[in-house]
Length: 79
Image (cartoon, rainbow, N blue to C red; front, top):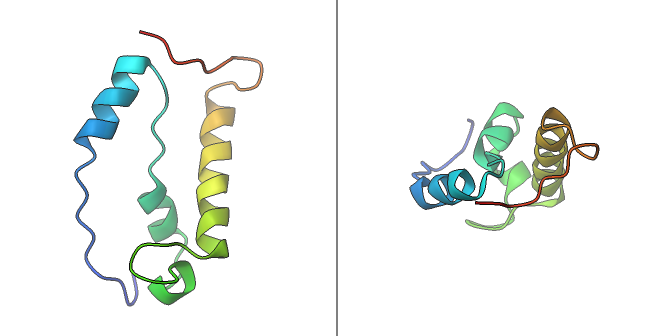
């Protein structure tokens, strides 16, 4: 990933919550990395994504929802 700072994320809490509630977990960072865009194209600062970054997030979410069968299959959190 060109011009990117090293990002280390512990997603264990998100992962366990998604598993516990039986909901999909979307990996936004992977969507950004796989886009091939540079860090300045994706981030306004060290935290906030640009419009392009948000578009990539939205596409990743839409893809996962479709993979899960939504809207035919409702994705309601449940234990």
